[in-house]
Length: 246
Ligand code: G
Ligand code: G
Ligand code: MN
Ligand code: NA
Image (cartoon, rainbow, N blue to C red):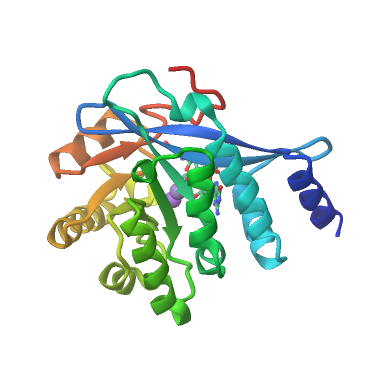
């Protein structure tokens, strides 16, 4: 289709850019940035990842698109070379299960890190629960291989998929991200509060750190602080921005 040809062309012309959203700790210090992709098409305008990532996954373009995104992130000097403070931010990169499961992904990823001089212990890879359960053993193997190099994993959109608990139980993940749909209900919906409370208890029991997504208000932040949440992300702390000037 036209969309397919345009997306393929966008990869060749590197018309995919990245915006970065801060992640803060309990003191509101920025400890990481999440990289979020944007496709800038001359005709369509800015296309959001919820639109083109699922398309790329279905149409055999996700490896190409994913590689362009990673190359863009790795070559961003402002992101990696923050001033000589000891608080260099981590970088959270979303990857599709198709990428993770692609033969040779891990080796290519490590080679790119070496090429761009990227310290792997500053990288978190975010995966969603949509990963294909049939391949879970293979996923574990790739993840453990990358873990050994210092790469950490976060389970994104936690609570919205089918198999959350199986993934938590089986996958070597270090962080989970409470989906913003639950955060939106804090202070409003006792059901959402019950879910968020118990995600935090569950994660603590498993030794997994929790990042709350979509924090928009001080009240939501304070509610999460009172329940022991580790990290926070959302418009209350900062929008995704396209240029980082430290
Ligand atoms: O802010 P936003 O609309 O950008 O992001 C929507 C969703 O798109 C995020 O939840 C994230 O999972 C996904 N996404 C954003 N950037 C990327 C990317 O580079 N790769 C993949 N696979 N998914 C992304
Ligand atoms: O990876 P993932 O789906 O979780 O990406 C986060 C998405 O949430 C992105 O689309 C991002 O633009 C969006 N987002 C980030 N902060 C907020 C927020 O405070 N409120 C809402 N509604 N969306 C947010
Ligand atoms: Mn994410
Ligand atoms: Na999410």
